[in-house]
Image 1 (cartoon, rainbow, N blue to C red):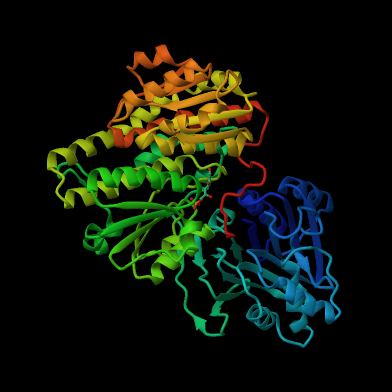
Image 2: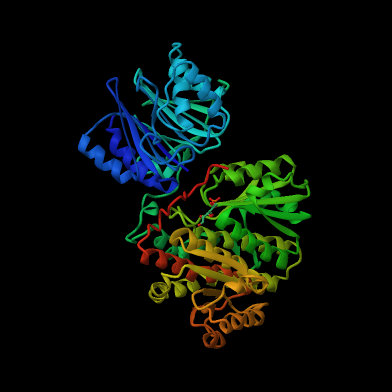
Amino acid sequence: MCGIVGYIGTKNSVPILIDGLKRLEYRGYDSAGVGIINSGESILVKNKGKVSLLEERLADLNLSSPLGIGHTRWATHGIPNEQNAHPHTNQDGNLFVIHNGIIENFQSLKRGLIKLGYNFKSDTDTEVLAHLIDSFLSKDYPLSKAVQMALNEVDGAYGLAAIYAKEPDKIIAARKGSPLVIGVGEGENFIASDVSAILAHTKKVIYLDDGELAIITRENHTVKTIADKEIEKEIHEINMSLDEIDKGGYPHFMLKEIMEQPESVSNSMRGRLLVDEGTAKLGGLTDVLDRLVNSKRIIISACGTSWHAALVGEYMMEQYARIPVEVEYASELRYRNPIITGDDSVIFISQSGETADTLAALKEAKSKGALILGICNVVGSTIARESQAGVYIHAGPEIGVASTKAFTSQLVVLALITLLISRRKGMSLADGKAVVEELIKIPDKIKLILKMNDEIERLANEFKDAKNFLYLGRGYNFPVALEGALKLKEISYIHAEGYPAAEMKHGPIALIDEDMPVVFVAPKGATYDKILSNIEEVRARGGRIIAVGDEKDDELDNLADYTLKIPETIEMFTPILTSIPLQLLAYHIAVNKGLNVDQPRNLAKSVTVE
Ligand code: F6R
């Protein structure tokens, strides 16, 4: 939530900031702004709405400056408007502050500052930071000290940056709870919420950790703790190209990411399958494998789409590894004083690795002595670094706000972990080999499914005006029903509910009539016959049925109004295949309705507030 970017060097910062903000827009797109400082003069330009609007205004102004910071906002405190857009300033307008996170005690700080004579122009918590820092600058503290002293008074989360016209040779950045990286260049340096914003300029980054403050000049960077202890930070080399974060000829990131799934899923398993030994090799788990295998219980915790992947993981691990698994929303796990012991392993799944609820749950589970594992996509993200061990999904950057390729890659990694544990717990070599051999075939099977794109587009056209959808599945494909419904509602704004198919008769069946499309996720498997009965029940009540099922399943063709066919696979892998037609269906319905699928209203890619 909220994207931050900053530049100090010899070039004009304005295009660098705009390019960075465009790449960060997935984090929030309610308003955007930049603050630049040139020869002691400070200039602020900000507006409600997207970065493209800001870009147009800046082009008219023809500004240039070697020092600047920019921000794209996802509103928490205060509606999206120009006053609430960042950067925020002090009263003299010579200090700019941008912030991602929430200052929890901002009301009491604000009251104190108003008593001191400060006037507030916005409803944001961030403006408090600007005036608070100013209150120390006015006592002649240098900017770095003023920021440090202000942060000592602040409760809450922040990734922030500040620049000051009277000290035009530096950016001050600080982090607690919201991600921030320093990009290290030659005679220039950068800051950003994530590396995508600065990758065009440098591949060398330093990840700030919680409680750290950085003083960044053109040639140098110094990092210390907020408590003033200087620290040596490692410079990481980013192994990602700019092409990977562009649209690559597709109209939307979401479509590009759906279409990339043969490769992203291959990347998730690359180098991790031991075909002859019928098992997986996961370097990130080697040191903790005995403890994981001997866990009395595995808890998997996540939010949103990652939580749906966790549910599939529960089916996989309980079926094959025979370890009791519980799946918890991270936001619920955190606040109910959960019973977790040193005998438990807790796996946190997060594409971004920055989700605040997931991170808070991780810290809670860690404090109770469990083994903490992370399954993340973003390398070097906070959840990845806070975990004791883990597995990257290697899906590549996911920019579309609706998660697609990360989901299927999370499923692959959960399958690999399941295989690894199961083989250690007595799964036969033959069974292990069967799983490995089938997993290897999955990318080609995805390619076949993607060929249905045009057919699904036509189907979407037919259903785009529906007001409600029901998604039903059983067993492994119950979480896919939830995920299909989430994809549709978040990008098309059509109300959609996912349900276990058998639960339909306990209530939702009352909703069914000829205006209610019902999507059944019904590949062959343990509950296949039962789900056919559920389809009959919907037919009997006039519901329109779209069914996702196996390619050779003629019975389904007879029952459903429309069928979307997937190649056959073993049951544990069916969610990887069945979820893809549902991603395409949601995508085409939203595009048909003329909606912005990559940036749906009210959402942000990385949810860094609790
Ligand atoms: C839905 C979606 C969200 C995320 C959720 C968790 O398409 O993307 O529901 O899955 O916000 O995000 P991560 O996985 O980054 O922790």
